[in-house]
Length: 253
Length: 253
DNA sequence: TATCAGTATTCCACGATGCGGAATATCAGA
DNA sequence: TCTGATATTCCGCATCGTGGAATACTGATA
Image 1 (cartoon, rainbow over the protein chains, first blue to last red):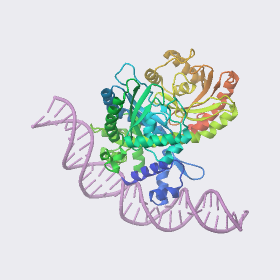
Image 2: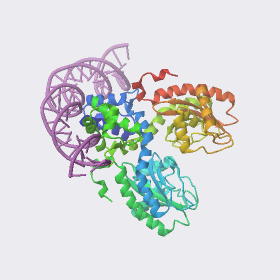
Image 3: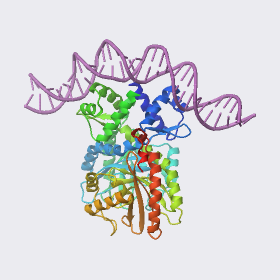
Image 4: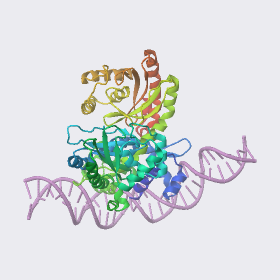
């Protein structure tokens, strides 16, 4: 339906900009006359999906944040079967995290089968530089974005292993891209190891398993990396509803 | 624009349900023929705003979560001027939090003017039962929802002052409703006091100031409650873009 | 203060797109 | 296999969305 598509194009243009836009800017971005843009915007503003600033520009409205309150929880539900299989297969706690502003936000978790298990609260936001999922998320960004995010968030030392030097981090991220997975080797918390695989499902995500160092042997890490790569493929297919429109991304494994 | 309104009605119906719905259910909820609902849904599914389960039902799609990544940050920006005035007027750290699942999520913060200041990371999720903002958020919910949320999240003791008994909490929330504000008196962290005022802007929110106990005198608490009530009115007007459609809620101060 | 250029907003005739009812396909349960 | 309920598709029609043009608004400049 043409008019609905156009309204959604507007919502997405405002989101992509991350700032207020004028009618002319939106008209140029979407390729429609100003009058049409304005009529669509009127509906979006009436419904709270956009709001207008005093200088006549428009920005994303609060209704999106209201809808969002439930959206991550629903994604977490959809990811659970994949995480459950991972936790069962590897015996360690499986996590799903997404890039949220300048942090890694955990949106789902399934505990491992051992008595001593990792626990990270769903909704918890972890530093990008010192966690496996964080490094997996960063590996998906251009260097410029990495510099901006880490510059803003800082690179605080959590343990003697934490990478706190930007150049070292950029090198580490090259390694992540080459291997296909990131490792947190007691960088966030002493005695905790984590391996994480990045995937893109409309946003950067990472799926990981984490556990205590004595159990997270190099052999398990290698096995986990393979299982995580398969899980990432499944999660990409499950979590990117809009991806179906962009072509067979699922084929790029 | 009729067709855009109808598509947004669908998005909101799926969100409000928080679970998958059939075409018939959606048709009944919105009051349109099944064929019309189906045509709208096809566009929403194509764009990732809805997704279809194998049993033919539909649920919120992942595109909403993708949009959400920026939405809270934008709300935080819009709230800043009000929080800045509060921090300047009272000298203590001002916070804005929203109800997110079963926690209070901080979406904006402006530090106070003293050398020793409260710091809570934006995006941090705090327990509802043991924080001022959490109790302010809960005070806006029916008892049944309070029971469900606290049952699910638990009521863990953080300090000797923490309320860990449900009946005591329900009584406390009655008090919050009567006074118009909630107080955290070393319930989350010893030596930290917070006063928070609830408001509704499409979702439950709370605006608060917090500081160390020696500075958070009863006199300051009373003064802060008054300032916070005014701030809540401003924030309600600023953050509820969809509210304009529902009538003059701003008049219910 | 007046003017002007750029931009946002409003108006309107027209036809394309969205509409709803009916036909057809699918699904789950007996 | 059959059946009833429901989802999906099809199609004629008219209403709603369209884009161009007219009008209103704004900020910068003289």
